[in-house]
Amino acid sequence: MKAVREIRALRGLATTRNTTATALANAWVASHPAVSSVVVGINRTSQLGENLKDFDNFLSESERADVTAMFPTEPKEERGGGFPAWRNRADVL
Image (cartoon, rainbow, N blue to C red; front, side, top):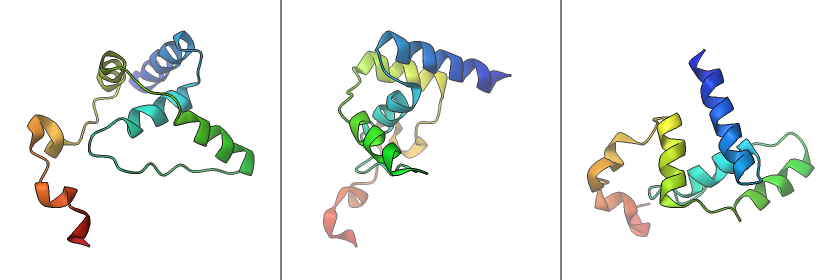
């Protein structure tokens, strides 16, 4: 199964960085230029602390590209810098 290979690859990359796959995934989401806030799900309050620590992890451009290659899920509108300028304005709402 492709998903199993992808998860194993993510875990392998996380291990080389002395972190978890979850922390790496959170860092990947937070590093996306179109993301201003990351919403994490928890079942226990202890998970909140774990997730908050994840945001101390930063990815290099190379690491971000490695994770993106594993899970090709970039927003299509962001590719090529075509993200609509009006969506970046705070006064839209």
